[in-house]
Amino acid sequence: MKKRHIYRPAFYSFYDSQGIAAHLERMAARGWMIDSISGAFWRYRAIEPSQLHFSVTYFPKASSFDPGPTEGQQVFADYCAQVGWEPAVRWGQMQIFYTDQSDPVPLETDPVTQVETIRAAMRRNFLPGMLDTMALAIFQLVFFFWRMYTGPLDALSSPITLLSSAIWLPIALMALLELGFYVWWLPRARRAAQEGRMLHIRTWRYASLAFVGILFVVEILFLLTTSRKELVYFLFGVVLVVLVCVLTAAVTNALRGLGASRRVNRAVSIGICVAVTLAGMSALVAGVISLSRRGLLNQSAPVDTYTVYGMTREVYADPIPLRAEDLTGAAEDDRYSTEARIQASPLLTQADYSQDLRLDCEEELPDLSYTVVDVKLPLLYDLCRDYLLEQYARRSPDVPEEYMDHAVLQDWAPDGVTALYRHYTGAEPRNRYVFCWEGRLAEVRYWGDDPTQAQLELTAAALCPAALELP
Image (cartoon, rainbow, N blue to C red; front, side, top):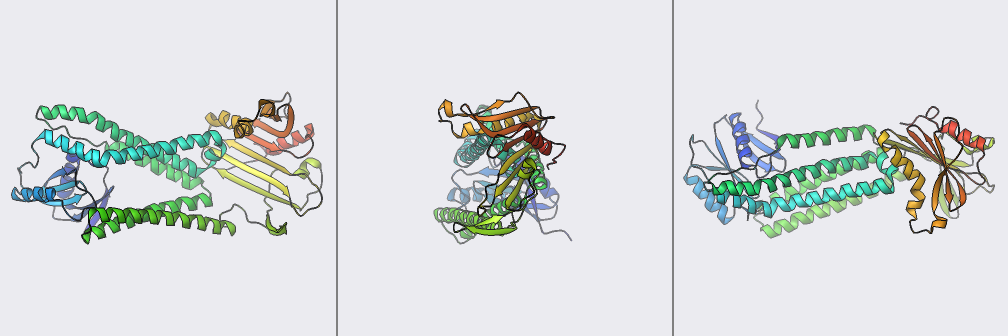
């Protein structure tokens, strides 16, 4: 049995009247009549396959919040009915008519009026929306590059950060393409109209399909590499966006059916959109906090808790590749809390390891913490290395030069290490070292006294690519 309705994505610009009409004629020939339009998805109802003609017109003063056709639209619809055109669907400023006449009367015959009508409609609806989209996309991309400068390890190893940036890039390009094509079209269309010809706006459908394909590939890469916590963020975000769109559209349609005025419909719809978004974000924060406390979103769960200074502390026992006891030769001590936090993306893996003495331990024992970075794209290696060498100076740019943190290349390096750097505060050395291998970096923060050459050798042997494999 043939379906009564189908939904199809339509990659047509809102003002590609010629392309939309040709598409609807092909669909009617296959037995599908346009029934409703909602953003990128169009709904069709089953009909007998027919050879129909379609015409797309625009009314700049109309709105998707109108309870019915405006006076001008109704007058125009009455005229269309007199010459054999029937209304098919209305979507905001767009109104589509169809006829089964083989040689129908054209609905618009003056190219100058057509061009100016499209221009007025675009200025009222299309251009502000495209400019807002492009501004938001540029803001998101600038924010990403700012994060790349202030913390490239976190930004490049986070699948959700890369996903959001990769999504905003094609969105920005798509908006730029649409705006650029409109700027190219308008003066040429005006000149053609003066000559009695209508130069229609055309849709770059293959470009739109390419952008959608890029987004699909990026999302697949994200789902294959993300952590549980980021997967929760992503899935909740998708559900929230769909919920906001569906609920807002339902409210708008319901108010339109009840005959609410444009002003009331717009105010209520926007209010519902904002309220649902804020409620959803609040629910996300509360849910993440609750799940994190239960250890459901963490890579590891605490093995014990203790209370000190009136505060409850958690104890972890994650396996780590290098312990303080390995450097001191002491027996392994269970008074430590060890954590391993690993974040990986297709570009970078960042593994943060820490070995902290419990605060209720009266004996003083050495702590140890270190970060190991695998750079999967060689182009990013220098960026990540320079950040590890300059991160403390970047955090305190106003510190006098004599107290400024900086890294100094050492004359000696352990076997297999291509370069070894040590941090200094002014002229005073710190026990922070950066080890460099091909494709790998490691910043190690030692305790107390200066590490010996033997301890540096042990560190390099434990953290080198041959000894430690990261995802």
